[in-house]
Image 1 (cartoon, rainbow, N blue to C red):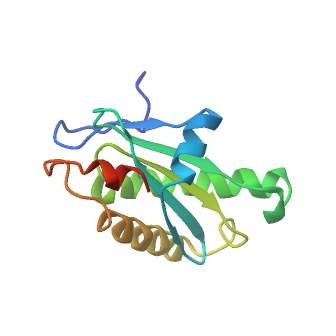
Image 2 (cartoon, rainbow, N blue to C red):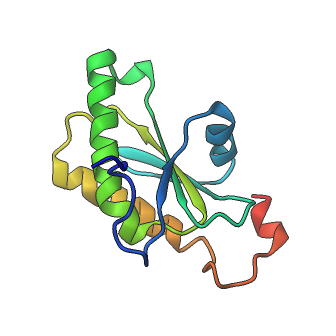
Length: 139
């Protein structure tokens, strides 16, 4: 299949796009943050009317060598593919930051940590149908 596996299949859930540039990551950094044992999750509503969910992944050299960092990012990507369609908010960008245990923690615990963070963040954002308060965007 030529399309990315990050695209949603049914028309009711929003598409997911990858964040790739530094300014996109810096924009999300100034939003809301939830920390869990296996992952740090940052989120911020975009200023445009794009309904897609943005997602980016990052690791630091503190968590290990390139092999460990790549494994951690692969696990974060796989977990986000499962969870963002259900727990992500439309029009919000998310950045998942790997922690020391991300590459080695049990898969179910990683999913639980990410789900918990996404639910907490979802509760902090108004529904897309609600009028957006300009002061809310200034986090």
